Amino acid sequence: MGLQDRETGRGFEPGFPRWRLARGAVIQPDERPPLGQMLVLALQHVVAMFGSTALAPVLMGFDPNLATLFSGIATLLFFVVVGGRVPSYLGSSFAFIAVVIAATGYGGSGPNPNLAVALGGIVAAGAVYALIGLGVMLAGDAWIGRLMPPAVTGAIVAAIGLNLAPIGVKGISGSGLDVGVGLFTVAAVGVAAAYLPGMARRLPLLIGAVAGTLLYAALANGLGLAPPVDLARVAAAPWFGWPSVTAPVFEPSAIWLIAPVALVLVAENLGHVKAIGAMTGRNLDPYLGRAFLGDGLATMLSGAFGGTGVTTYAENMGVMAVTRIYSTLVFALAGAVAILFGLSPKFGAAILVIPGSVIGGLSVVVFGLITAAAGRIFVENRVDFSQSRTLLTVGTALVLGAGDFTVSLGAFRLGGIGTATVAAILLYHLLRDEPA
Image 1 (cartoon, one colour):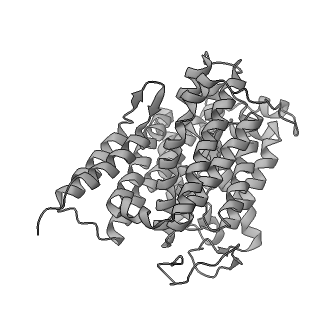
Image 2 (cartoon, helix red, strand yellow):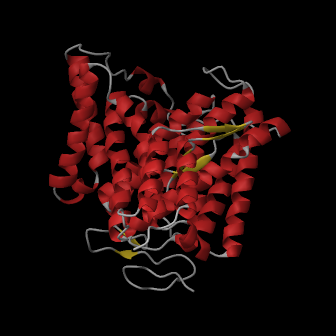
Image 3 (cartoon, one colour):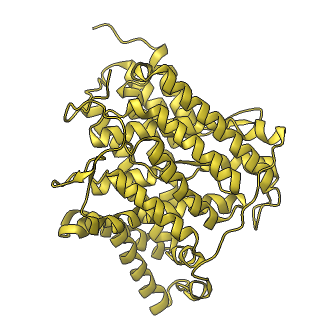
């Protein structure tokens, strides 16, 4: 049975789309915006992912510029594996942080002296992930709909957004100035998305970032109300520099600790693909196997040269929700841009100049939109919340995700998104519908 588009009814077409020029406000995955807009849109996706993609390697003692470089390579590899049909950006996965620190004994500052050992575990996790993808491709996708009905899918998508929410809230919490700048950034994004004309309306996050940074600079550099924006490190950083690569070392103890993270990545990717399908109005389930395979191969490639494990990014789903532009060509271009920026230490220094309160404000918007996408899944599929089965499934998953409930089984740790996913699936299938 071929892939059916819920909106147009088209069957699945092998190979890459032709990407016709879009004419409407919503740009679908197999469409493209005018060429003049694509670079700016791609840059917006790079900006959206950069904060998290750079932060995760820093927490593990990895090179953030190398992580940026391989996020671009990973995105292009994913684009090829899924045939340009699933719009996604791949960035550093936070699911690896705890197990990498445990496997390497990382002290929390500077380069990780046992980086090679961690890389061996990351490559192993990618291999497990890729094998799961091949299994899904061979077994078909029919079981996905039975395993993950809309009630479960919506619960997982909402859990992803709520699990990320503390990051955004923490970013705008602190001094009164931080709160004010963060909320101003949120308002600037909203105004840009709702009121600005033409192309400007499609770039609300970039506009919000610029507006928030300018306000912070005026208050900090101009009035001395906070630590000033320091451009000295941007000026000192070189325009071009080759990152140093590290080869993995395969130690069984690290592999057993890190490889099970593949299960968390499956849960994350599954929720992301479901959310993108809901936003675009297209059934992307037949591409789940390819999505898992692409993500797994990308993680193996990144780990083989010193990069972090990667995953499809919720931040970029939020960008799609704001702009309503889902063209996969934009993501291919974003991957190419990230590769160039990954080779430029000056770019990394420039992004790090953006105040934390501004990044927090942007995160509040993006993570909120991800959570709201679950409501669309529930409404469009007419999920019946009068049933106890649905209420318990959704409610439990949301609390586990929002609370970041973590389960530790020996060396294996399953974080909030993973536990929410497992709980939603198990509860839905263990409970019975109430009799009519």
